[in-house]
Image 1 (spheres, helix red, strand yellow):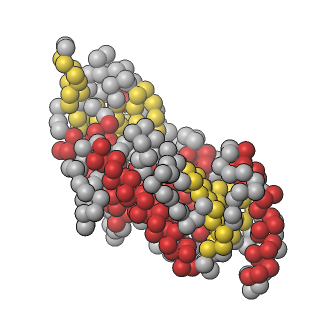
Image 2: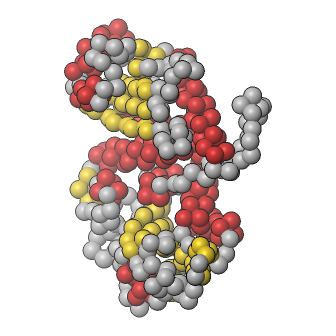
Image 3: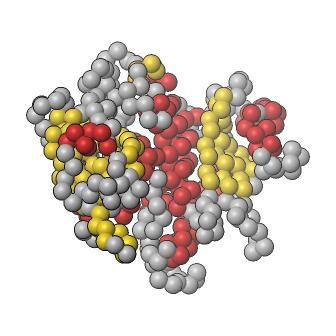
Length: 404
């Protein structure tokens, strides 16, 4: 099974979970925290660690953004969901099977993100399933932590805190709680600082700045996770990167010809194009910037999705998640995370589109491609391509490195 990068998955989960009605803002916080603890051989967790120990290992009390100590949480009880078992001369095992633990974690995550009238859509359910598999399979030790908002306070019943420890002692905490409504003063914390681990990032962004920054985090996390699923060789995965860059052009979309001429003149002078040339993706005179009409863009996205599923399925076979199969089978065999591969690819495109059109529901931006549509022969070792979506103020750039 392809391992799931937990930090971007946790940040993306917040953005795929239910929203506050009428606002478009996430209704939940979903925060990842990394830390360390004594290894299982030094301090077994067959008996539950104490709340003070968990506070140290899980880097409590910092849990969620908030003014002062409002985002702090203090462990008051610990429940062991699984623990490592070590015996001389044999590999470490766990007290419970991974599948059994994954089912319990799946239920806990689902319950934490679907309280009241909130309902989870299919993409959130798929991401929860992948997170549950990763937490259960990636950590021999896993505990559930009950917390209070202040030392010695009453336990909070509407939050979920899970702490895993691997055999080397590295820990990962996943904390989920209902998020507060939009701030009354209109200032938001910078989500890029939260992504970098600054849980208590101060509110400095306006609503418009926050929405754009939040979309950037979403696109980046979806792109990173997608690449991990798409196997190119036993050791290599596809890399997808996204960037939204202001172009400074005065574009009148009622004049498509003028927009095309202006963008074609600007692109070779752009920072991203210079970077791609420096990285030897293409020679300066070799990259054909092709305008993609609606039909061609739809083909590009469909081909990309099929490529990703095919390569991810090959990886699932290599990991023993599915039996041997024939490429001509119809339908192709299912594998864990196959629908997530689809949702991740679509979310990258949809989110970058939303960035350059300033939110969902805008007019589809003109699209250009380099190396698109993909035309790969049997002698090629994958492909490199670039998709560009042109908005009124900025261009969204999705680069795909699928060359082994």
